[in-house]
Image (cartoon, rainbow, N blue to C red; front, top):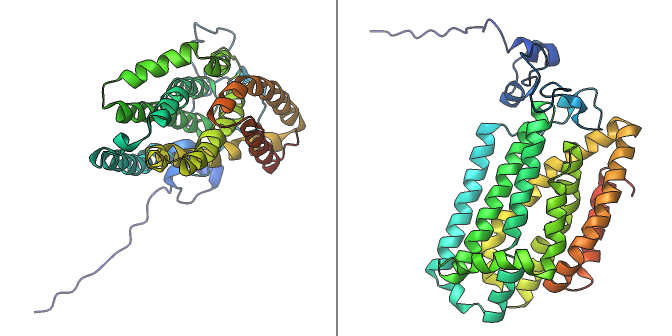
Length: 328
């Protein structure tokens, strides 16, 4: 008995959606393209937003930045919901394993009391700053134009909420899950002079009307400085001061910050390359928020590390801005 197996190739009627075909041609599209491009509505709205009746939903005039095509602000990571969730799930699994190892081995008990107090005073309150970062990126999601940037902003917002939770978990790991460290950290956030500049900076960013200015103030200026202070300089300080075990608990934030910078660098570079108008506007915002960040972080950086630490962080910011084509 002979069995003959035949195969046939079925050609799809269409390669992709019509709006994707208009952008990229009649060829199979990537899932990122289909999930991202031209998803925001631009026409045929039923009514203008009651909270801003001078503009339409997704109105590009909500920022001083001008783009010929807002979908040029694509994410180099090509994150849409599925890949983002899968990527962060793996990162979270590693982070949870680090916390389990820390607790199982009783590593919190071996940490010197002075170091424990320093972490509760100068590290755990960052969870409040991360909530502000969450809100600033959510604001960009709500008011931005083009799914390419708004979906990346919502992913960033959720990341920052995750950061806040992990800072809280560090506190719980140090106080035996009593929550006392979180209450103490909150008091430091409210009343400790070292934190009042950062607190004021965060509150000021929450009043920004232009969503791209909020992106500059938060994701470019403040994040570059705090990431360097905490995830590079303080990391080195812990290594040299018997705090290596704590590095396990901060690994998620470090890895996530590097991943996020790939996206924010790409957005910034694309915007300033678009036009001289955009470059001048971004430089003006950076100038304003650099001064505020200097005033805000001086007391904290001095208490956390040294008087020289903030200058080193600003050097990192300068290098980052130069890399994307901005000479401040």
